[in-house]
Length: 408
Ligand SMILES: Cc1cc2nc3c(=O)[nH]c(=O)nc-3n(C[C@H](O)[C@H](O)[C@H](O)COP(=O)(O)OP(=O)(O)OC[C@H]3O[C@@H](n4cnc5c(N)ncnc54)[C@H](O)[C@@H]3O)c2cc1C
Image 1 (tube, protein in one colour):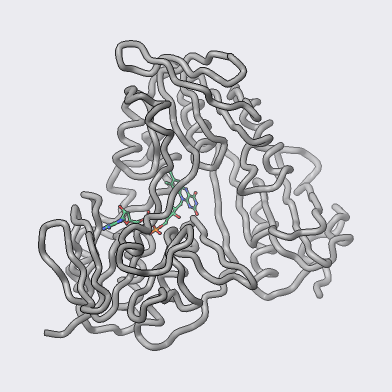
Image 2 (image 1 turned 90 degrees about the vertical axis):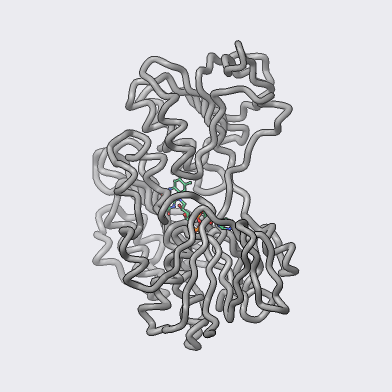
């Protein structure tokens, strides 16, 4: 029997490994194992158009059902990888069977971080949002005039706040840090998005700590803050980040450090075992990083497929990410860590025309955050990919069009 590749995790990254393997001419068996009982689907609409009821479940699918047979991808959904024996090159599955592999890919993603049980006390009406089933449960709880408290001012929480507010619910966002999006974006973006939410009637409480949840008949009813304030809450969404699914890797003896540790080719510390997407920590300059974005899931999946077919190319992405809130699109490219200068540039004279925030280190461009400013994102992305940089002082001059800036 010819051994092939087994991919654990049938999400954005795992599916892309399978797609790219076939596109690269890989002819051996490919098995894709996914614990969710759904065909592989995309997550970004879960907090946006799917939650709003503007997209149905079918339009979430990354590929139609017949694609898998056509591409000879043996898709096993509703099935979990439960243990790996890296010496025997074998993976055990939740139905009691086992699969032998030549190459194994772990694309197990992340799961939503939850509040401690002592806080939620098993109350109904407390939600997280990671998968389609979560989105459906949250959708069922929403109704105009009800009160939603979002715990955590990150991307998922703010996107849900925007969607739900537009559906007529009363929304409060609770953030314990000094500002929303503190972990993932600069202060300018936080400030502008805060103003946008407030203009839509969302209450944003920064530097406020959750103390407890109170229920009535087993259903959440109120959120109590550390300073004693009490917020009415028919629904609570906990959006306090995600944890990488590393347990399978860890039990199999792979190195794990807030993510499955991989090298530039997506290979883990065990030959023949790769990891990619949200669950993988990879080298980035002097450091190592783990990213949670569609672009990374796809691009790192591609990198792993290349390594498996023997055409390894080092993974050195220019990361990018987007978020939609109301009619505003935030697009971010690069990583601003270590910046020593920031330039804010308005896209036009009116605030509704958008703005971009440019991060530099020693006059070299590191990252761009563009709010409602697709041109700034496109220029920034191209320059970062070409390793070129405009001068901060030129960029600061609003009369100089981006296309005319000289680069170094
Ligand atoms: C609500 C929401 C909105 C988002 N919006 C955006 C956005 O606007 N822009 C953006 O760039 N990114 C966004 N993201 C992030 C993006 O969806 C993820 O970065 C991307 O899905 C990561 O792909 P992945 O394949 O690594 O992981 P996942 O898509 O999480 O797939 C991993 C899969 O592996 C399965 N699995 C785990 N363990 C096992 C096991 N042992 N056996 C079998 N299966 C297993 C999981 O159930 C899951 O189905 C959003 C995420 C969420 C949740």
